[in-house]
Image 1 (cartoon, rainbow, N blue to C red):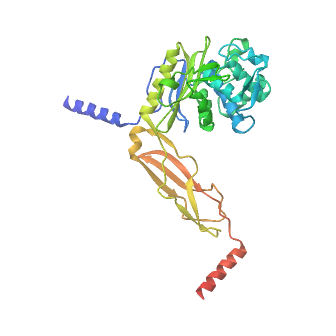
Image 2: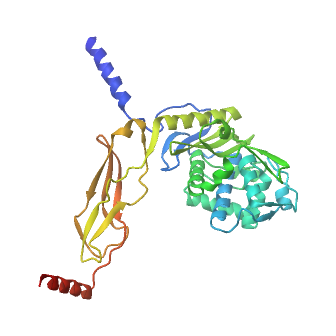
Image 3: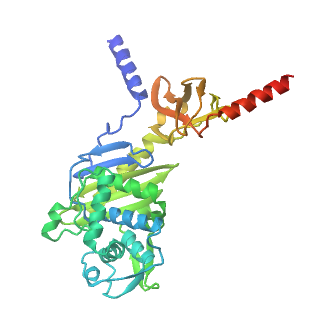
Length: 383
């Protein structure tokens, strides 16, 4: 009995030291689909029916905002551009800012209305401004979804309204929503100027906006992102937050109540921030590789990609880096990005990542004339 007790204690201690596996914890969320993703690496930390295609209501507007931000950031439209509302945009139901046909408003105020109050009329007006029609804009949404690898997604409008027959085809999954949320947050951080607003106004202060995402006010580090609700979709949310340099995205679809969606996302975010951390392993010194017959004698070997890693917090103080150079010398020419070695990141005996080391810059090959001059200099110096 004594030996059995000691054995059980040892097993418990070993299990307690093991890193937490992504998705191993069952949070029992009251949602039809859910996922927790790290924004920097795309690592899934928790999932529950994450690939099931489901109605998503106004969470749709994450893709709408992504296309708007892409248009802003590449210069096709500007924040202060004036948009004229069409009769189609003005007729949108659901959440709205009550645009009138012919009314003008800036891109900034319309985007703010979409991000904060989930205004369907504002979303449609911007879609028409960018693509000429909502249908053309939706084609762009579906094309972008395909590019991002959103395999279980199909959009039929830019708002998420599902009050017509076509809406039966309007679907996405928790995982796909996390993908487009990640793209929006990491590639267009300017969106946070709008998604973090709690209360604001448009129309020169005469029309108030209040954020439908209550986590923006009540969850530490919240950066957005978008709520959604229809009777078919239930209560949905893509919530994002940053703590200690790590940004997480929590998505839930098909909750029965608004309180459940906020509680479910909060549970996932708490789980992620409590168990994981983001590290960026740095080289103490940049390794150099000798170059034979090159216009430079050496070339720097640098990581080929962003080396940020998501790890279990228990591993943070045991991380070490090992550098392996494929050959001490290479022959010119050397192309920029040419593989030179490997940076292996370990925690104790566990390999966390193997990141290629590549040439930081190109090195040309010496011409016959260059070689002759170099030989002549050596002869002269030795004389």
